[in-house]
Length: 373
Image 1 (cartoon, rainbow, N blue to C red):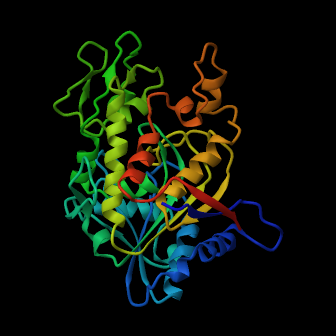
Image 2: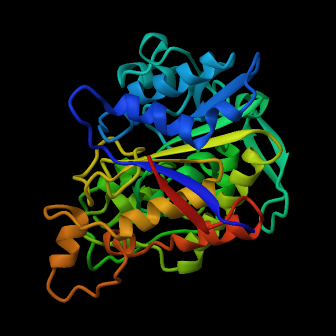
Image 3: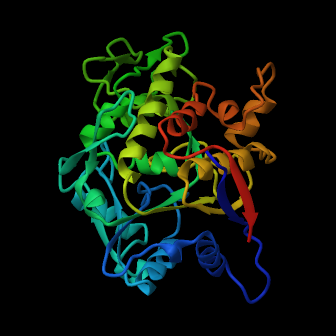
């Protein structure tokens, strides 16, 4: 496969220009106007952020993309699917309230917001995975598949289970209905080291399936309830929870790539990632830790695999920030450095499998040419 082209611009702005203008120019240079949107529904997939989290993308960026779609005759809408875990986005009503409280509405974004898998997260459609090895039929939020054109607008960041969250995670995990998310998560189950557990109960508060209890003042996991989502791992401040099965996260990565294939195959797609506020964990948390890396810039491409690879490379070449999860880990006495910012931030993860699987099944290529705008 030939190299894909990824377009990039940094966040530097001279007086009289702004980041929103730069984003518009980036999208145009990357070819968004080559997509026929006239009279067509355009799904713009993004993450509205959990209440309390402040690292999610501002709605101003979404408006730039929506306005470009409308200029081309498209009918854009912002969309996401409901979550597996209790929180502010577990059903469509609360999800819409959360989006509104975080600044996403028809005024700020210039378009409607639709929760793709419906009121209870059950409105999905089974979509075949071309070349799928682990998933034959992906369960995708119906409104996403009803759209004629698909655009992903991603906040590129770290992640406690997949290493990083970029375009492929925004698409694969984010477009899965509740059943689809369970199908991706179900292979990995965390374990608790009782000698490190302090009984603080934070992991239980973060658990999305009420699977953690404290019968003897130490956390115990009910594996019949556990979905393997990994939120408890990110919640524990004492490293008492990890995933003893390294291949479980690898399986999650590969399934996620195949879900992304189901969403993108056979229709026009365009992908944008903003590498800023690079928090160590997902925007699904009701808080966000300090960024592990400095803001880098905006990337866009027709190829989500090349896009994620370009964002990864940019992050791996960046200087870790002190007073961050990554910086503190690297400064810890006796830290076994992985020379990998994502793995040094969250040592249990395995991020490369996502890109490997996506390339293997033909979603895109990891080989790219970077053009700076």
